[in-house]
Image 1 (cartoon, rainbow, N blue to C red):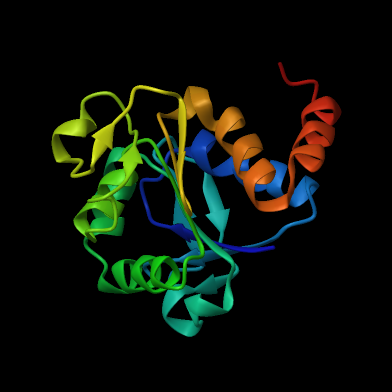
Image 2: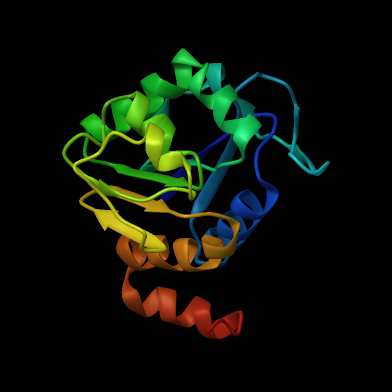
Length: 181
């Protein structure tokens, strides 16, 4: 499983670090792509992450999944990028996994890929979420799309993604390994 992480300045650190760490523990290959093209991407609370590559230097369709972490400023930067919209629409069009947490499901909504889907997002962001059904569930899976509420649901989100992409047994093994509830 190869996951493309689209990272923009202002991302929410927990929503990036927890999923990426757990996915790598599960054996997934995770590539962090800087949306701006900068080598370092600045988190909302000061954490700086070294990107693997600039988004404009790769072909998103070579990946099995695309992930968008939230964070208010980061999500605005994701929404402002045509390359981000092209990447998520391409992968969704190929029925590959599209993963988003916190305010990032609104990026999916802007790209019109939630219209016939059930989804969730950070409380208050649902006013910008155009979907078939909004849910207050902490993690929602609808077909190839997985959405989640926020930093406090990052672990559940990451484990659910492992379960749907790599199998329940793998997710249970990671859950035990990290002593998750």
